[in-house]
Amino acid sequence: MEKVDVAVVGAGVVGLSVAAHSARPGRSLLLLERHESFGRETSSRNSEVIHAGIYYPKNSLKGRLCLEGNRLMYEICGRYGIPHKNTGKLVVAVTPEEEAQLPGLLDTALGNGAEGVRLVGPEEMRALEPRVVALAAMVCPTSGIVDSHALMRHFRALAANAGATEVYGVEVVSIEKIPRGYRIGVRERAGATFEFETSVLVNCAGLGAGEVAAMAGIDIDEAHYRIFYRKGMYFRVTRGLDHLPSMLVYPVPPTDATVGIHTCPDLGGGMRLGPHDSWVDSVDYAVPEELGDLFFSAVKPFLPTLERGDMQADMAGIQAKRFGPGEPSRDFVIRHEADRGLPGLINLVGIESPGLTSSPAIGKMVSGLVEDALSG
Ligand SMILES: Cc1cc2nc3c(=O)[nH]c(=O)nc-3n(C[C@H](O)[C@H](O)[C@H](O)COP(=O)(O)OP(=O)(O)OC[C@H]3O[C@@H](n4cnc5c(N)ncnc54)[C@H](O)[C@@H]3O)c2cc1C
Image 1 (cartoon, rainbow, N blue to C red):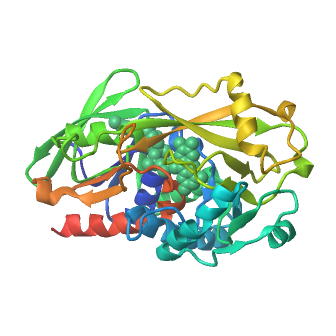
Image 2: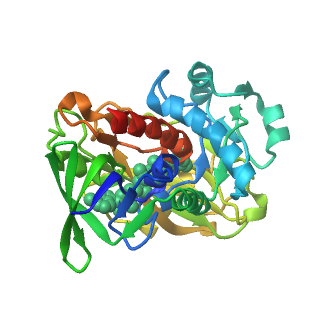
């Protein structure tokens, strides 16, 4: 039976970054993906925002990895020519009630170490972004946008150069603990199955991460590894783009644990609005045209030139969350499961937003866990 040193499940931006950071000449590393190509799920269905790390609880993995990921992202993009733009971001208050929330948001952002964040009044805001109307705003200078496909291609190239092997159209369906590793059962698209052994297994399966952890014998309810699907839908602005802001513009976050419907300028000069979030039970990327009024009324207060007829339904993505409706938000899980009696198993669970921004930092962190697991 074939035996490898490291197997990574999932070729989204996280699995690709993990493979890029963990592959070494002389080490066998296999990256397994159920689709025929990389980045077919959440990593190609998001806002492509490089987040500044302003919303997350202090000392959370989300906050720390977002901040480090933000810095690494600009460094990598600059060095390797990955299309990106440091647009900056405004969190705008359009009512006195929202304005009163800005100092609290600023405190959280500063507590997280977000660089350069500050509050501005209407005049300075107009000078920064004349196409937005609001009473006041928080400015986040390190926010930006990135071409997520180009980033994934970059991680792929790094992984391949260091000797990693990608295998597509294969789904991991079973995991058995064996002395010094795991026996992995895999099903090909055509239905054929095969097995191989690995010393270290890294679970980067996104929406499937809970199922993969369960295959290894973890009680995913007790561990809070069960994945809940939160669908985020977008509308595209098809007209009047010249009158819309080039900065990212977000509302003061609503009370439903979302960041609210915001502008998502893209690198091609286009713009989406979103996401509007809802819990779903299964993967479904449909965006009903009837939601147009809701999108319009969410952004019209700060985008005065936008007309209802300027928008049409676009795309959707699904966040892999570790909590369901009404439950408190939970952090990323990135851990070596040796203390559960599963040495060599590294789980990444609930890698929702800011997972894209954090991906370079996650890859770095996990490569350390992989070294420990291989030497343990
Ligand atoms: C609407 C929305 C907006 C977002 N906006 C942003 C943003 O602006 N900025 C930001 O930083 N983050 C954002 N995110 C979050 C970001 O997109 C994710 O955190 C990131 O893409 C997660 O990457 P991943 O590799 O973990 O998951 P995925 O890209 O989903 O990759 C997981 C892969 O594992 C594969 N897989 C699963 N199970 C198996 C199995 N059993 N066998 C083999 N393969 C398997 C899947 O096919 C998939 O390709 C957003 C997410 C959404 C949904």
